[in-house]
Length: 223
Image (cartoon, rainbow, N blue to C red; front, side, top):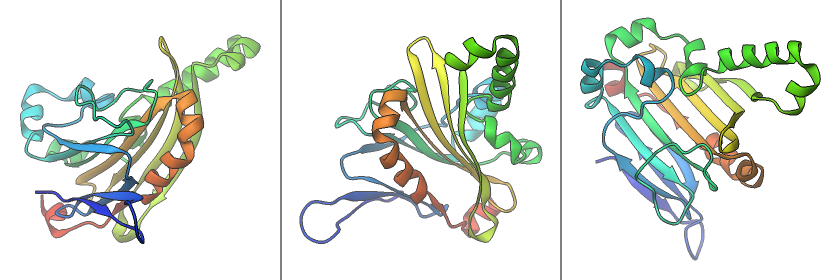
């Protein structure tokens, strides 16, 4: 079983806990007040949900580890990803890519695994061109952070923070997507909540994101 470990700092109650997948070398630190639960099956969003065939989905079932994360006191297992949640919510996953995925994936693809960020940026730029004042005052999409990530042993990828206008209001998504050196294993951390929630909890979310560390294992390289 993957270890879900509590860490105590000094005396008293734990201030944070580790969510780890030692077999694949994924480590994450979350506040003690958050809840988490290992989930069956792959977490499919964005491009994944649009392109994964039923046959590929069956193959992924045995190749993916997913843990849902929820800042609420009670874990909501009905959905791993609720962008307009009042408290941070999301998931961390490790996926051993199928051969056809590994051959096709690129670092740039990582930007678009949850939302088609590149298309959204282009659409917002076009909206500003047509209506400079209105599109800036009420944007449909804002890219707040776009950073390359490089860790030890060739782990590489992107960290993005962006806001999206939805029917439920403005939401903020914090997305880290990484590949191992051979680009055969995907490591992903996605947290999201309403824009107001992110304004209130952005520092805490940033600490969680900053703790996301990958140490590739032999199992990961050979899968």
